[in-house]
Every structure is written in C-alpha cells, then in structure tokens.
Length: 213
Image (cartoon, rainbow, N blue to C red; front, top):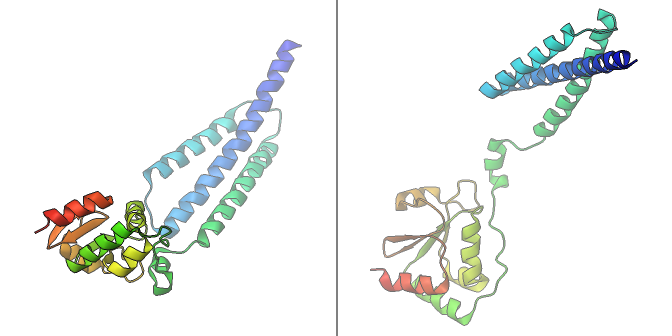
C-alpha cells in the first residue's frame, strides 16, 4: 500500500512538473518575442529560457500513467495559462509612457510644491544670496533639492529666483547651462563663480556666502 501511495505521489509530482514546465517554457517564449520586438539583448533571459526548456524536457521523460497526447494536453494547459499571464503583463506595459512621450513638452515634470514657510532669517539670507547672484542647480526628482527648498521655505525660494532646473525633462529646464557651469550633482550652489555641492542648512549657507569670493 505504501509503495502504491508513493508511486501515486511520484506520478502526481510528475504531472505537476509537466504543467509547470509547459508554463515556464511558454512564458519564456513570450518574453523572448517581446525582447525581439524591443530589439533588446538579455543574456539572463536566454539562460532562463534554456532552463525552462530543460525542465519541460525532463518532465516529459518522467514516468506517467497518461498517454502521450494527455501529457501534451497537460503541458498545453500550463502553457496557455502562462501565455495569458504574459499577455496581461505586456498589455499593461504597453499602456506606460515611452521615454519619448515622457520627454514631450506636455510631459515636463515640475518639482513638488514647497510646503514650509520662510523664517525671517531665511528671507534675509535669500536677499543676500540674490544680491550675490547665487544660483541653486537642481532637478525636479532630487530629494535633497526638495529638502534644500524646504530649509529656505517657499517665500525665500520664490523671491530669490536662484533655482535652475537641470533635468532635461524638467519644466523650464536649462540643462546646457548646468553642464556649462560644471555641475556634477544636485543640489549645487554657485556663488561668485564657485561651486558648493550638497544640501545645506541655514548656517552652512551663511558660511558659504562668507567664504565665496
């Protein structure tokens, strides 16, 4: 009885492996077709496809109580489910914007609104920065740039007018100006032709003004 039960479990495992192998092979095939459409190379994807094919071949050779055509139906069911899943995934990807669409004028990105209000100290510092012609180079997606703006506050940033958007897909981008200035990271302050990289608190900004030529 135990032997019969063991044989049944083994055959059940073989059937499961056959369905799984068929599904994996179908999914990998759909992935390779998608890669060809995108004209993209993926060595790991090819390796994964080879392993999936090996699993299917191994499962096909395992002992089974079913006829060959029944095994084919079982593997086909797994393949059909995997193909449906792949179609759903690729369909969802197709609805995402392309890089070209993201770079279009109507797709320009703006920095998040500044939530904090400026202190008297920040407003005075903003006036001093503006008087020196200071510039703050940043990008809409930069968290440290957002933090720098919050340190100064909405009023100081608005009145200072020293923010320069460097990301090519940002609203009002001046990427060429950032490159010409030699900006390597964000945020970077420029005062008197000198660059001061990194997010700074009010004391550090005051020290920056004092040290700038």
